[in-house]
Image (cartoon, rainbow over all chains, first blue to last red):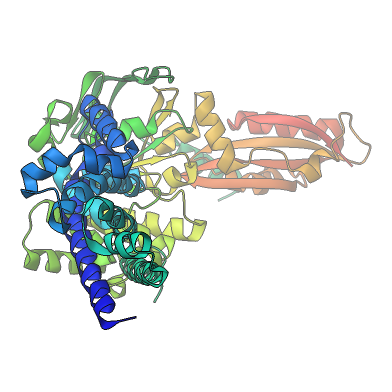
Length: 221
Length: 374
């Protein structure tokens, strides 16, 4: 493979990592509070607001059931509004964030719901406020689950980021489609797939390690 | 002094303990006033009347047991005390304040003077023993330095100073409950609520934890409310007891009185558990309904109160010159009173048996003829 092509791969990898990391960060920023709220706002729960919970649940489901490629196209006007353009890696961050946030929210909800309800009751019995319960009990106790959730989200984002290539989003997917498919360069396609495999493997391994580190439940010294 | 005289002296001592008019009403730490609790129907679950007509007081500085079968309403009762639940009607007054009327910040402040320990300990797995104990102090806004000092004191108090940096997964059940107790006491509460705190522990650890609670009550003057379904817990620790069944208080008073003269079937069934009033199987298999020549009549004697039930065998031998055979016996002490039963075998035919029954009845022991053995 020529040096030129290798440079293309390196450049595309950089774009993919940029898109994925910024989108993951933003999606977490939105998804984490939404997930915590979803997990604590049913009837009788900490922030009981069953109506809001139901509406939010529907929005989250709607976003998640829209195929990503359709979501990307459907929100182009919004993307242009936010990013100034609808083409390139920067613009791709918008649909990536919108797709990943509800996904993260559901994963966070599941992780938070895993926390023993007895612990919430315990903290309440000490006079803890709902916010204190979130920050001192729910998040620390759910941390291993939250780390696994974010790992899963980043892996999914890597997959999504390859798809935005189809609409000019740049990155590894873009490279694979344009060179590997349209110019029929199977070695390029293979290279792109290999890089993605390495990235996913790295993220998953790092996530697993981190989740183990923060899990005090079964760790014995 | 002969035997008759010594007996006369013994009988002259009042056998019933003097009970002050109504100590429970004097200085109440917790007072339930006409409380009922109904959980309304929700979705497919029908409504539940958890508690009704609850009217009683828990004396300041006491150790009060609340005993009942599962589903009797114990958990609702304890959660009304620390404001985790609101009564449907009536009010719950804790340390002079109507906790059932408090909401939001005021309720949270009041809750800091009520500690609670749990059956499954409810420790945060993500925090060390020390940090678990620090939790209520952080919630109350203590400074880091004050928290550190207080946590060390508490670890010493509960006897696990060496477990400071251990995570719950590295502690035994007893050690976890000690952390739970230290955490409950962290903000120096006036009331310590124990919700089945020893139900998940083995008997030996249970004893140690109950001893610790007794010490804490004695040394810190904390009012202890023990919610339990185990009579052994009430017996070992409590002075006052409330028996609840199907959401109602069926009996309450001094442990000694309630358990020496149980009136309600539930109380009686609880008592039967510790006393093992049942006839041993080895004996029932040998029991005959008709006298057996050369055999013995089998009599059960109930022992309740301060009467020296444990000397019955010796007294029968002395007074009636009967060779009493002790077939089975279980006498326990509850609140300083003897409670239990003896099963004795009386040789010498029907005449002696009648003599013994008459004698014991005269001495106010409830007796019952079970049958005959060879």
